[in-house]
Figure 1 (tube, rainbow, N blue to C red):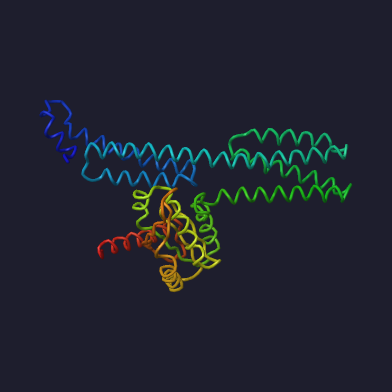
Figure 2 (cartoon, helix red, strand yellow; figure 1 turned 60 degrees about the horizontal axis):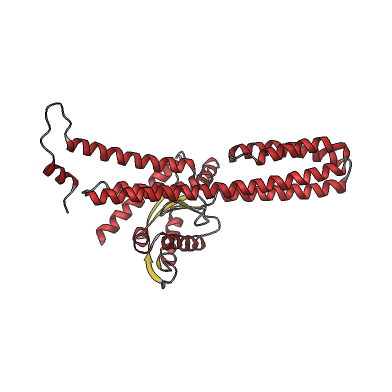
Amino acid sequence: MISLKKYLEMQVREPQANEADPIDLLSATLESYRSVLLAMGKSGVQACPTVGSDLQSNLANVVNRLAGDLTPPLVKETGTQVTQQVQLWGDRTAEYFKARTTEVKELLIVLARTAESVGERDQRYTGHFSQFTSRLQTISNLEDLTQVRASLVQQATELKTYVDRMEQDSHKLVAQLQTEVSTYETKLKEVEELALRDALTGLANRRYVEEHLELRIAQQRAFCVAMLDLNRLKHVNDRYGHLAGDNLLQQFSQELRSSLRSTDMVGRWGGDEFIVVMDCDLPGANAQIERLRKWVFGEYTIRPGKGTGEVRVNVDAAVGLTQWQPGERIQEVIEHADTDMYRQKELGRKQK
């Protein structure tokens, strides 16, 4: 197979004076292409962290493929992969925000009907609740979840004021309204909880883990961080399809969560990378990792698709471990764990 560089050397004439060298143009074009792919991945995470990490990881894999010897078929294949990944990210992002928006809108409509019903029973508050209901209906038409949440906080405060006033008039009526408010608060917490969970695995997402780490650092609570890079997931995706790969990620996540203590946090950092925040010192963390290697790593059974039999695959991961030191920021702790993880991954390659 003739590489692009050799092909150009064979086909392109010597550049004239003041004329760009085709080899230089090719190199600059490829570098720009790789930079654009990395920027797309980063933007995907910023736009929707819950599903953007997969896009970033998959585009980074494409960039790595473009770093070696290139052929026209390979470049064409990467273009097809990029199109598929961006389309998949767009579909998942649209579904995610549509689901979150629908849940909030349904909640607002229920609350508006409740407020309207209560206002009808007590004419002294009819005007207040009519205005309150109108504002809730307006909020339910918003598409921006950030605006919805900000408006909800304001309206919840106003609703509490109404409830406090009505408590002096009718304990029975207030009890009913408090029940509705309690339901509203529970549903709102459920929506917020979903926003902090990885859609595929159900583990804490990157945002949730970072918030947890910030809290621990603020409280000066000792902890260790382990980063896990799952091996052979790309092989499963390439050979059996992404549905099989997703199923493997889900199974691995469940085993990882069940093997650790309730005081430890397990999250999906992105793609095939996981993070564990352990409530212990370094010797205790090492003991937990050894337990994890014994009970989580090993053979998993996946079903590639309809009409196909079960497939058994062996799964393990490179593990990087570090202990937080007073004065360190989140980025420093993650960097230390990442460095150790990649060192372990390189040692694993050399041993094969």
